[in-house]
Image (tube, rainbow, N blue to C red; front, side, top):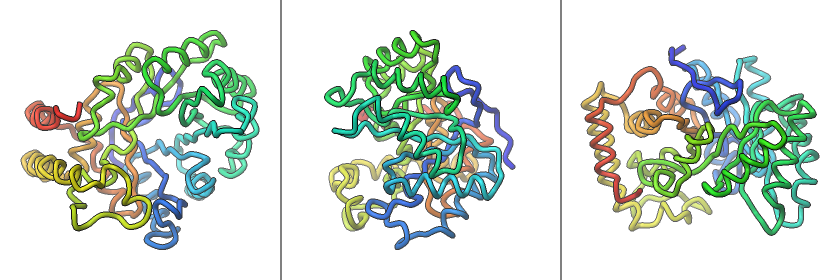
Length: 317
C-alpha cells in the first residue's frame, strides 16, 4: 500500500488520502457504456487496484446508472472488506418533493449499497424551484440526527449557495463538510467564482470531479477521436476545446517526464492535490487506469512544475 498522509473531509471525523475515486462509470450504461465497453470484472479490478494503492474515498450518486453505480460500489466494498469511506448524493429532481423526499431516497441508497449508514451524503445540485436550501439542509440534518449519515455536503453549489447551506446546517448544529464541483487544469473556475475561497473560509473540502476532464487532459482524444454516444456530445469533447487542450496535455507529459517519469494523469491529479483543501475524485474503468491514477499518491510536484501548469492554464480560470 502506498503511504500518504490523510486529510479530514471538512470538519468531519472522516479522514482520507487527498485522492478519491469517482464511480459514475461503474454501472452506468447510457453515458459510460457499462456492460459494453467495460464490465463487472473491469470495475472489480479498478476498485482493488485503488484500494491496494491506498485510495479509501469512493463517490457515487443515486442517478448514476439509475442506482446501479450504488449497487456496484456497495457490493465491491462489502466483498473486499476494505476500510473505505463511501459517499453518495441525493438528486432534487423536479416534482420529487424536495426535502421531504430525501430520507426515503437515502434509505433506498443505503439498501442498494447494503449499508446501515453512509459516510458522506450530498445534495447533488441546487434547484430553487423544487426546494429551498433551508428545506434541503433541514433534511440533511434530520439524516444526521437519525444516525443514517456521518457527514453531509453539497455538489455543484455556488459560493453564495454554500454560505446559505452552511448557515442553515449550523442552526441545527451540523457542519457542511464539502462541496463537489468540476475542477481541473482546463476548468479552473472554482478559483475565481468564489467556490474555492468559500470552501476554505467555511472549513469545507472541495471535492474535484472530472479532475482529468474525462481523459482530455491525457491527450486521449482529438478532433478525429471522440467518445461515441451521449458522452461524445459533452462540451469538453468539442473540436475547439480539444484543440486548445492539446498543448496542455503535452505539457503534463513533459512535466511528468521531468519529475520522475510520471504519466500525465498523475501530474494533473497532483496539481490539484497541491491546493489546500482540494481532494480530486478520479474515475477509472479498468485496473490499469485505477493504478495509474492512484500513483499520484506518495509524491508531489515541484514548485517549478506547479508554476508551469499554472501559467499554461491561466486562460481557464
